[in-house]
Length: 103
Image 1 (cartoon, helix red, strand yellow):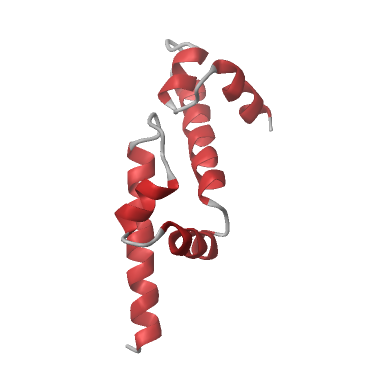
Image 2 (cartoon, one colour):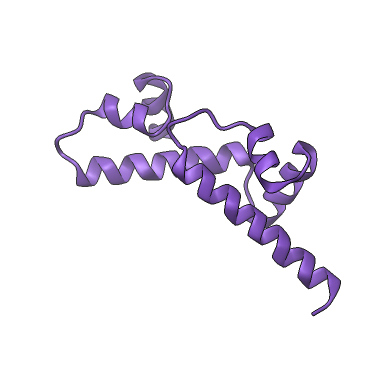
């Protein structure tokens, strides 16, 4: 295996750690600095690599995962309110959740 393949595998492993972290901490504030530290990259380098490997920015990825989780909860859990779902998925308000969900 050449150096480029090894580097790409290492980068993918680091990005997978970040994605796992994001999915487990959606209800918290997730910052570029925090996830870059998890991946052992500078924030600038992390953002470049993440965007290159995933095809979307970190914020876009986080929003998409939050909306997907919320949609799943809306479909599967009739006993939970929309505001609870919004807060459980990391949205600061129901209004922000509604605007984002509508998009």
